[in-house]
Image 1 (cartoon, one colour):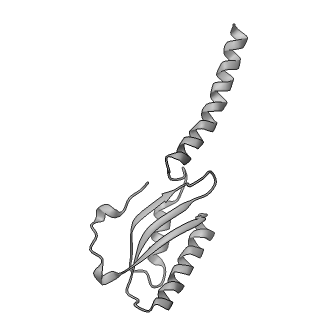
Image 2 (cartoon, helix red, strand yellow):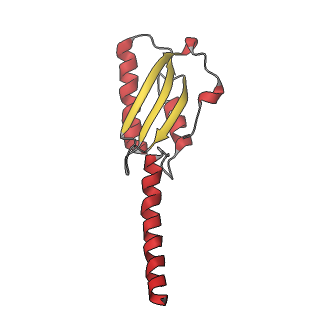
Length: 121
């Protein structure tokens, strides 16, 4: 009985570690050690970006990171906004390991969102 109990505890311990990661992915949880504040700062410091809000980070599958956010810009030229978007996605990929980023661009003077849209997920 003692050996059976030891084996059961061993199996439970290893199963718990594996299931915990799977549940985090299924619940669309943010990666454990993700630098959320660093991402916000990097996005806000980027040329052409006035503000960042409605930011969500999650794991669509184990080992991959996805991000969604609203970017306020003053630029009205679509070509230049596209350049800003490409630079931001490259920064997110290289500095923070974000595999998939969906960025919605808004004209800064017309943004009418409250601070409650800055979420950590």
